[in-house]
Image (cartoon, rainbow, N blue to C red):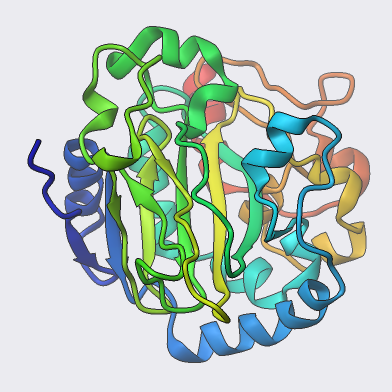
Length: 299
């Protein structure tokens, strides 16, 4: 079986081209999504909370512990830990331009599913291959013709090499007929990147963290997934992010984090209080233009 390298695009390329490439290949590398200065500051913000963590999963189910990795650190609630993330990464215009093109036709709006800093340590074995959308089983039952449930941006915060655990992807697996088939490690390709580059991946694409074969390197990446606004996120952000922090963000970022109601196409609104916009109830001001457009379409 011949595997072709993932396409590479630039962060300055046309979002239409990037979205088309994603649909064709299932995954691609965006070169230079973050600048060197952004990567440096982001790493500085994350160093201390990561140092305070122990490696390994905090979950109490063995199969999930294995999935998380014995010598891997997974830092969640990144919005609280990182000013760069909450003011620059989730406000990145290319991210939203692509997300609009992926989700608008079906769901209209989207929000944040989960954010993790994933730091793979020396000796950690390769992760079990999986599709990100599998936590929403109906999408995998529908197969390749299903709407896109989720897309994942995985930003390299250190260089990704085959030796230090670069994410491995099976190109074209988003087009397979049988979504119960996760393929095998010999079908994967390592996605090597420079710090600041990112993998953009469909939730339908089979992938997994690679084996870290080094003696002293830690592979650090920032994963954040966007998903249809009618699906339940993995992280319950309104319960873990302080309201004072959220008040400093734009209405769009507040909606992405779940502090505003969701208005998927043809819906009178989700995530409300007594049929009222939840932002009004908790005292947030301003309107998200994307939601204003959808409200007009559902009248």
